[in-house]
Image (tube, rainbow over all chains, first blue to last red; front, top):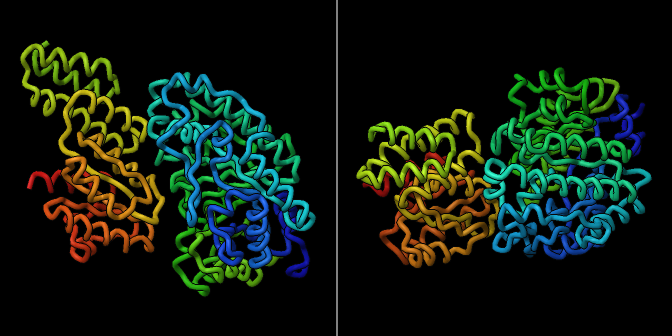
Length: 353
Length: 200
């Protein structure tokens, strides 16, 4: 097949089916950059579905990304519970840590499942999905992110207090996880009804920087399995994302399961090389990465091409690979380096290989 | 139980994260005439040292470290007060939170200013809280100028303050360039640096 024959949707579908596409797909997310081009402050962008969708579409126009993102931030589920947010002109919003919703362990038991369609920031994200899917969904798949339930509790309680509660008040935490998991599943289902076909679940706490695998899985292993099963049942592709250098990758693959795509920030401890990683996990899921975002802001175009070529050589054999940063494209990163990822795919990532 | 046994059990209870037991044994030890300094140095601190070791070895993680810090804090007075924050324009908080946790775990009181902290607030809070040390973190290259201004502002308003700097783009060479007192590459190093600054 000639390079460039496929639409992004066809390219992704081929990779997910286990076939080889025309070339390696590229996922980035640079709305933090295109908002400058549209003259929009960060605060304006994350409080308007129309502006956010415009920034996402502009990035796809500019770079040729193979995915659109219906996304504001990682706090929409927590905001639905009533968490207060602080918006800034030039930075992402953050939760108001001076006015936490869960002030004591007893407050976990006050959490109630809410109607996601009526929660303001989730409804706004659904609207972004609507706009993206209606505008370009026939050729570019729309993705969205849902939070790990324990992370939602961490936002509502404060991370440190939440981590201590995991040891001191596990039953309260588990009650909270039950409620949050229901909400996240409702949210994921609502996203798929808006045309979202790729759902990313971030395992922010599932790594050695935060807590032991035993505690992590013991508290919410069942919740993550239930959540992933529901996402798959809703017909979405499930991407598991872990931003830490030491993710609990085998727990994600073996104990939780259901994943279609795996994205990790660094070579897992169980692997010697990227080629080893491909051999060990590449037959079980599509692998996505492996650019550490700060590197994309630090090196030049030629270096991006060279390193991407090596990644493609190590990870793209036989298909099953998506090239991109391991997290959001750096908002201060050069646009040309994002373009270099797509150029690298066109130059070195064509099939058959 | 002999004094040494009581102190040993206090340490073991800290390691086991048994807060009520630590508090009860500490009270019993003090009531029986064991010197407070002995309770700290021969009971609580060895327990915390072991907790830190287990953390470094990957046996304990943040939740265990946090609970141990709470247990320790409940049982002892603090070694000193550290004003800590991520500088203006920088919203990274996980690294700074881990450093704050390490200080608390090691018996320091932390005044956590949070993230995106205006330059002047470091010195102002240092003076207002009667702290011993200012710790400032910058996690991205573009906020290094703000880190430099923090050090200058503290030096101008409180010349004798001890100033610690850290963060991903910060290097030991910046100590001399910015005029701070110390640099730390990670949380444990930060505690050691402040221990050294305050005992000098």
